[in-house]
Image (cartoon, rainbow, N blue to C red):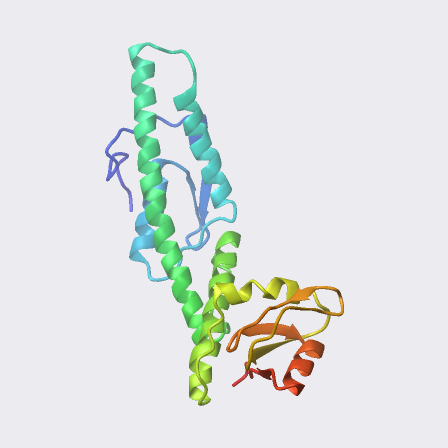
Length: 239
């Protein structure tokens, strides 16, 4: 859809120059457009009206950074105290404000869609989730959010359905896990049945202390000892 240069942008856009040569590709439409305030506005409008993520060129974030930095350089350039230069700088400042506002909206829309996709993944698995339309940074957001959702779904929903109380690992509990994970071999998730003071593992790492009902990932060797002594019980993550 064709749009005028001033559509929804409260300032004039200067003629094309070196700062307007960066490009963004619409892979799903076969188009290549220059990055300007207008194209950022178009991207934001499209993202707002589509249910699915729109496909952006893999270099989109880098291109945006280059575009914004060139605009900032125009604002910060020294000299040119004449009326024309002052007006041009002021217009560029207004354009930068508009760009920041548009990027907030664009990011918010994409973020919400990615989080919704992560929710779907935690419910049905990743077989139906197409991550190829995400930028690399967005894929990492999808993976990390999905991991958190899956962990809580297992520890709350799966435990309840198995007739067990929910198990929620708080941030305080997780502070013991980095040291534990340095151990070799598989880790076993256990719930402590009684308090256990801190102790030293075979690799001289400090483990614990733990209070009753604390949860931690421990090496199989350590977990087996604690379980055999009745100090902890294994949590079946597959239930």
